[in-house]
Length: 156
Image (cartoon, rainbow, N blue to C red):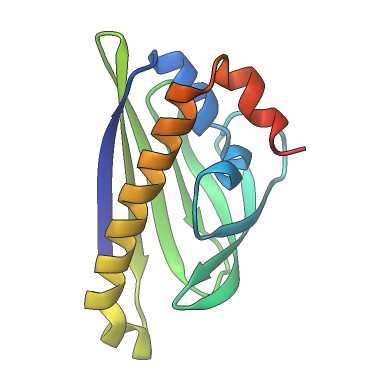
């Protein structure tokens, strides 16, 4: 199993950052390996919520079905794959630091068979991707006036 983790400090209040990153549908605006995502119910993450994602992993497109396993408002969301081609677990941690928010994005991935040979390369690729994705979401949130109103309009 490999684990990748990255944190960024976002210059916005915790409630605004969680309001955006706690709704997985908005991931389409900032996750570079994500092509489609559908939640089985709208809004912020809730335990038991199902996510249907089309992602690029191992240089191939795959569908991953995941279930939200933790949703602690303004603190944490987590989900894990269910009946998918890869076993993965992901969490987002939110921490208030004065008027800013530290976001930590972490993923563990179980590699099987030939995929294990790719581990060193995959770790490096995912670390770079996580860093770039969190920098992208930081810029989106910090540079958009009223991000919880304006950014969801980009999905329509």
